[in-house]
Length: 154
Image (cartoon, rainbow, N blue to C red; front, side):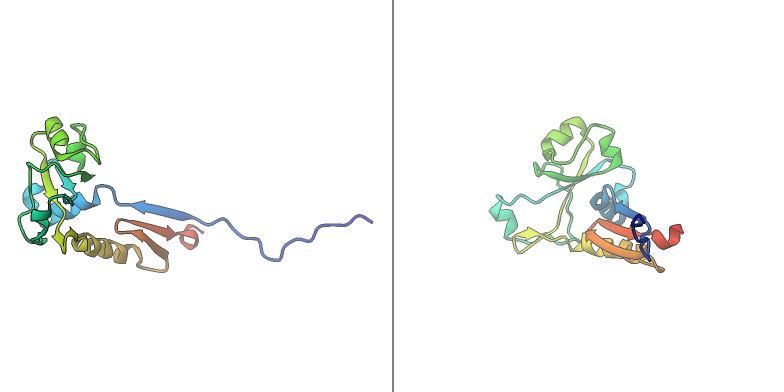
């Protein structure tokens, strides 16, 4: 008599998981806060950690934060700016050579560091919408999340 392998009592079904990455999220947050930027090429720039004088004063979210002469590093680029070849990690000056009308919005600062509070708050608003219902939800970062859609897919 030949040995038959036992069949498992429970067969695991494959999971259906979606990775959500909100592209150009920081730019979208800035356009939402300043509607005059809508339709314009926009990039969000990191603060300059070597500019010790500028870091002595906090740059609050409600302060004017468009610094088109900045040479900070781009951390987010709108679709309007991408059409001109502007990419993340470019310097502000390099990006403005490609797109002279580019609006450079600096990340707020506090205590000599980037203050990402406005982006975290906006990310939380998106997360609360994505987490509605019985979907399993896990945030991965300010602008990324995973949704387990297995139950919804069945």
